[in-house]
Image (cartoon, rainbow, N blue to C red):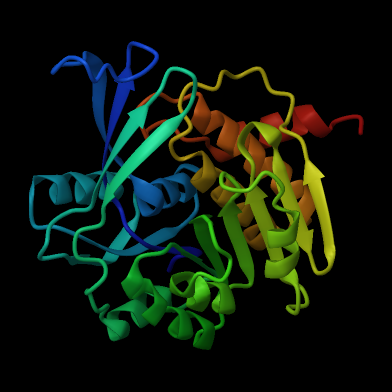
Length: 302
């Protein structure tokens, strides 16, 4: 039986690390450091919980192809319950991430058949049964699993990714279902209105905004607060998976271990910063002893 079920897309990330400051479009060939890895939101989240030692299950799809086998084998080696991993006839989802030396990233995402897939709800019910937390990402088919998770009594956390328009109809089902919401504030200089909007009208709902180098925003009920990045000396090399690590660190602490939202946010930030020090890999995500030690070092003597 699992504590947490991750619902979303896992696939292969191809990260293209530029040697220069930008792409040189005046020539045909640019030289770069190209790395393939198991990633995307579902992959990073599921592997993140497993690294923390949590009993984790995954509901999603991969293709019957080389990349799908790599995803399946990697998640299985982490001890993740894959009963809910089905086949996408269109193949395995893939991202190409153009990584700039100054930390910028441009993502090209191919979700394969996720808009048309239909989940096996009986199978999903078996995977969800007994779990405490459903960590839900944004493939179109995942919206059909939300009522099932609610009926089974799981806490539902949804990651809206990089929100542009808070009234986006695609995200409406996920927003309505969530007890806890995450979103990236990459498109908003001041995320205060979004935090207040998402938290408003839902007593007890918690909303977290990832703000990169600016830290995080946190809304609980009608109170919006901002927290700077933790004073850690680990380098920021690669931001892939940082938002997923923030959510995993927060949710494992808040939902599963009973920390307060403020304490859980710091633990999520520690997990995110650890991920930023990893280059082109979802291996080596933070473990529970590492997270506990770094949290203790920052909070001792407060």
